[in-house]
Length: 217
Image (cartoon, rainbow, N blue to C red; front, top):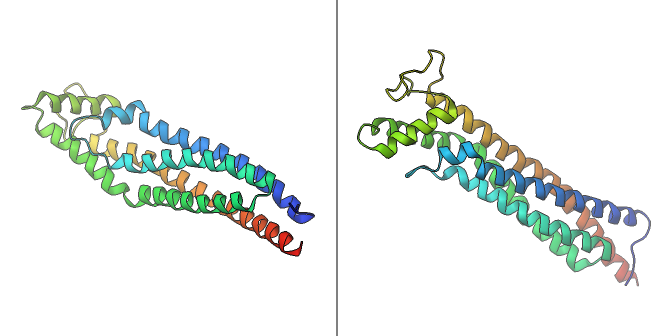
């Protein structure tokens, strides 16, 4: 099997280093996705009966992409070391798929931000309105009050008569809380997608160099 020489050898080792970093990025994306999914505050706010699940769609995309990134990063390292054209081409194809998933998560996080927030606000408002008739709804509303340190929609609720005058109303508190979470999803998705473009360039350059060397031989 022919070996790449000169500048292409440098690309080979750069691709290996990139894949190791890519594997670490996959670990980070997976960790962020799991944190967003199992964050105690998020879990309490969206764990009630009838709670909107739109937020978790982007989280599931991040978790899936992070796991695949770790696997692809490992095989990318093997492809770079062995100079396997097949592995490198597969690596490029996998990067392309993950790139699409990450961009989808980022775009979904930004584009659906208002819809997700509106769904959660509506869920809370309905819990307040039905709290006098349904004890489960009362419990849901109280969870929002405790977790977000808020009260009312925006008028103070009878469920928190001891709230201070400076206490934020829950609709604004919900907006601030989920804005922060969704921006994390968006920036992580788009940031990692940018890194993957570099990996696709390296893999194609090395793959073409290996193919050209074989044709010469």
